[in-house]
Length: 145
Length: 144
Image (tube, rainbow over all chains, first blue to last red; front, side, top):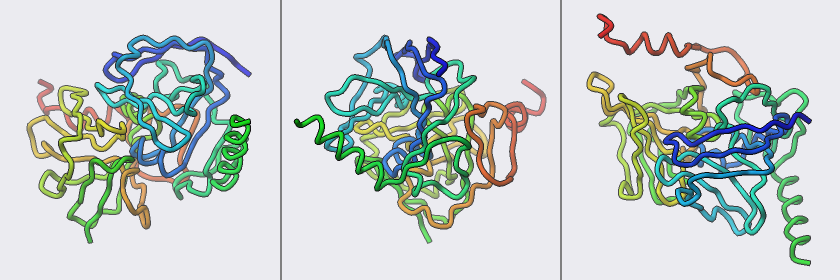
């Protein structure tokens, strides 16, 4: 694991982030929601810790499902993060970071929705929509007990 | 056959009147940041698309020559539109991810290929252009 502190921002600069990112932990999500939200896809998110955000009041939150919410800059529309409702922010969009060198996709999810112009990433774990929903159900059950 | 699309929450939708199945990916740093992934555009001239729910759009002027529109309610990246005077003024490049139907789409070009992060690459071969080649294509011939 290569952890490094990196900085980034949205397109207009009103939301600035600084976080320790695990460069080898990018998840590529091919789900229908991420496809619509990004305007293409897949959505690339990176695991983060020790996050500092400036301009938090500029962040709009969309309740995308019963369990998930999506954050974006209300001024420029930049995609910021997906998070589980009520859980701490543990990922950010990889595209926010000024320096993306060394980033590698290690998990690929909703792979049954992957378009024909993309091949599976070498060395990335593969998970289907059904497998992701099973994991989600288990996580939701876990948080209820 | 026309094409339809909408944002994640459905507050903004559109119809493209021409039968267009070709899409292209832009790897420029603005598209990377804005979309959060890969922005894939589908082109429509200014008279070839009709928007519904336009009042829910926020328009961000991202450069001297273009603007980006997203849904104010859900943040979906809806379109990039050329604002610079010239034959392309008003052209839409809708985020292809917002299309209702992805059947038969062909990925025919990739631009700003030199800005693509090493973390990913698409399968197959297609026309590719660097950022410098793109800028040269749109710069005035006398360089002014």
